[in-house]
Image (cartoon, rainbow, N blue to C red; front, side):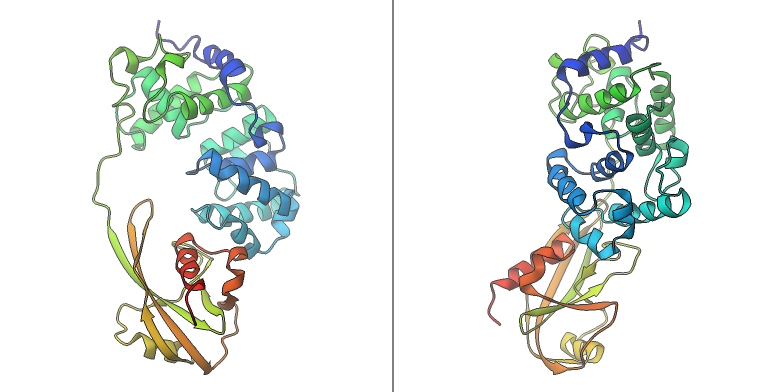
Length: 351
């Protein structure tokens, strides 16, 4: 017996007694709230998401409120959660639902997947939880469960392996209780069939699991092929005056897209103080190099060398790209985590 015939039943039965039932987004089938949770949970742990989810709903209780809000407000509430493209796409998708779908969230996975920032698996999860659609998901937890249970070799991120997993996921769908089944897959991967130290003795699939039988639990799923992680360097200017710091909006694409951040000093600039005066019309009285800050992204590492400038009078920068923010107001500003760390270090400094 290959385990396919009763795979779904095992998970649904297990979830009844052992699954998670008290997460905030499990108390509703409102597609807005389900969608928000699914986006926040991408690349982020449940414990981290819960307070962000609550704060976000307090500010934007429904889809119309999100669509009507300025993007800056959305990014400010997302600050610290990372992967900011998720927040930008969340806002774009809310606007699209209002403008294209008349304010009604699409009910079919295929239509949901056409919204900005929503992929096939996320769309299927929303459709299953909110509308009961019989749709397969394939997030990281599910990939791990399927690779181990059925002995699927190869890195799941490779196209051919992923295609095989999609076919397998769709073949395992139950005729009913799809929402429970989808949640059970997520819960099993998150709490039992974990990446490290899986609790095989508590797994409802232990007697049919190929990885367990062949002693390959530690090697399935296959790891991403190793590549050298690029190291990048950047210099930024902390332009400070009278308890305020000058921030510059990042371009829409790229890291921290659309967020306020510290102005980036060009690599070719050999006299940063002269660049500050030429670029902003602000004459630095003093400058000091701050300790370098290292930050890891998914595909590269970034070393940030910050230079703090105390500036006197000069041209006032006032446009949509630049903004003076008081150091005392940093907590409420939507800033990338490394920028916040640099500025928090400046709060306690004199001057």
